[in-house]
Length: 271
Image (cartoon, rainbow, N blue to C red; front, side):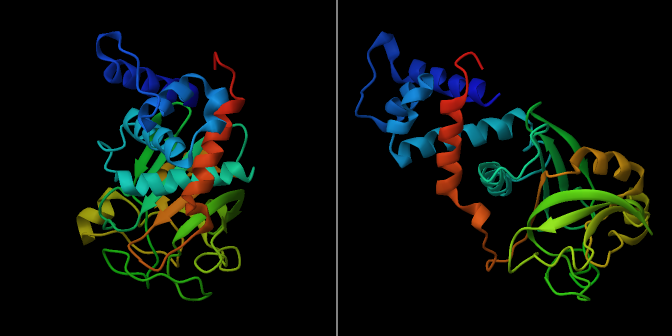
């Protein structure tokens, strides 16, 4: 899929950049990038700026292909989540058999669908659903976050999904927090993804918001089993917030861009 998307971008650019069949200017970074994407073996010779052009076009293409704007997911939030996803892949932490990325945007109020589960291979949103935040994180909106036990707050940042278990909420999914200062105590706090009756359209109609958890990203009970089965075992979950103090090693753009370029070089030409 990645090869097809990037090659499509390159071909489109070449058509625009060479009207009347004129040769493109080899000194132009965009032209050099397009030519190199058509010949991925030469990606290693590009500057970082040129590789980033290809990566940025790829991110936008994935965003558009999956219809994420129509589904209500901000491009800026997706870009952060997808950058992290590539860095997880760089570290060989993600499942090899599925390309699933889950994004939660806690800048949106709880009465809106603010969780997106994206099948990157198929290029589509599998689920766009309601998700609850912690009771001490806020009322309608998520405003405060914590990594501390007994805070009853949500934790922002990147997670890797872990194994399932049956608890008081039924089938539940353990989450490994991957950002040291922001969610690393998720396992200790028993922050898991589970279904809850207080996460439903009916609850919103009655109270104007969702119910709240003890810090877990709770989802509608009607879909919780299917959601958990889809995203379990080493897929990436990104919980976005408006907190300006949030930082993460997984938001390292340079690593993501270089990893993307390396991936292109290893793909077969007919991939």
